Length: 112
Length: 116
Image 1 (spheres, rainbow over the protein chains, first blue to last red):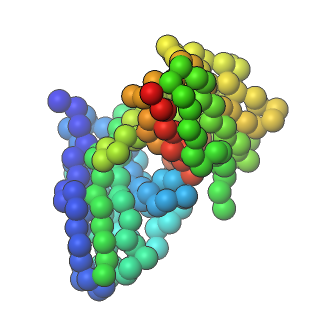
Image 2: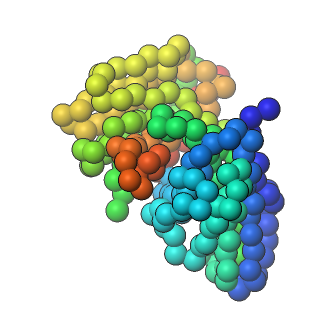
C-alpha cells in the first residue's frame, strides 16, 4: 500500500529537549516536505527536499532542521523545542511536477 | 504574508445544498491550484485541481471555478452530503524550476459541516 508514514503520532515534550519526527514514504517519490498546521493559519511549509541531499527552507523554517540522506526518509529535527512549536505536523511526498502531494497522518506535538 | 486567502473560515450547509468556498491569490506566477480535503485525525488528501488555462473543472459533485483576471478560484460542492463534512484547503503552486519545484502555498482552511 502506497503511504507516507510518520512517527510518533503524538508527542509531549519539554522545552529544550531535542526531538526527531520521522517520515518515510514507499512510493519512490523525489519530493518531500514538512508542514505545520495551526488553527486559522492553514498549512505552512517548514522545509522541503527535491531529492537526496537537496533541501531548502519553506515559509517557517526557524527552529527546525531536516536531512535527506535516503530517498525514502525525511526526518524533522527540533534541536531545542519551544512552546510556540506546539502544533500538528504533516509530512508529504510527491512524484513529479503535477504536485499531487500525499500526506502522512500527522504528528501532534505539545511542548511544555 | 498570506499569499492565498480563503473564505469563509467555517460553513454550515443543509444536506442537498450547495457549498461554496472561495480563494484569492496574489502571485500571478502560480500555475497550479489544487483543493485538499481533510477529515479529523487524517492528513489532507487531494480532492480536485485546476490549471489556469481552463475556467472550470468538474469531477462528480465537485467543481472548481477559476477566474484568472480576478485572481480568484472557488470550490463548489453540489448536493452536499454529511460525509462531505471536513476541512477544505485551497492551495497554489509556483512554476517549476530552480528551487520552487512543488512548493505549495495553502489557504487558511474552511471547516464545512453538512447537517442531515
